[in-house]
Image (cartoon, rainbow, N blue to C red):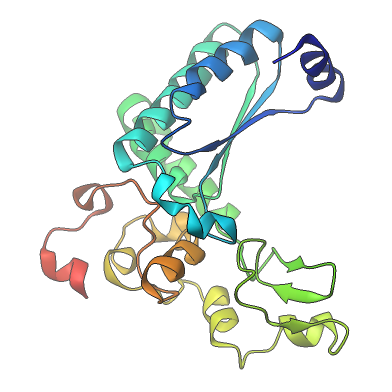
Length: 235
């Protein structure tokens, strides 16, 4: 990374950003070091999603232990820097199960704050596809989020955005607005469903053909999400 780029980052307060794949796991530590030594105040880690070209390259997605290792490093780095009076910002995106994993981490380090953390995640609402998030392409096609280009809701040149957005005849949109969402399998029985809201439904759809199946981006193990029997996972 050149000096000009770093100067631009610092002056514009632009974060360092990385999309996590198995090819980039080893770069996380280097970028966190750059962030600290160069005074960049924000680091954004984006999980790999399976929309568009991402679907073709989903085999490059980071596997569970890789994801967990990176998350642990982010949490530990944030804690270390806060303890010395620094206030950097660390953000993860496209994987709402990160909030559930944060609860697990907090349970080990600050158990007294877990109820407040869970309440904040529940209040935030987590995944907002089809609710507080929309994507309108340059030619007018409307989608429930930027990753769902393969599932158009209609075109604003033919119907108003509001009529498309609030059309309850669309089963996907109806399900995205349910609380809890009509997820199945282990997601339906997860103790953190209220904190994650079913995560990214596009990954489930692209891997199974079912919008409500489990999201393969979740790195939590069955016992961590409160499952005690194989039957619960299958239902």
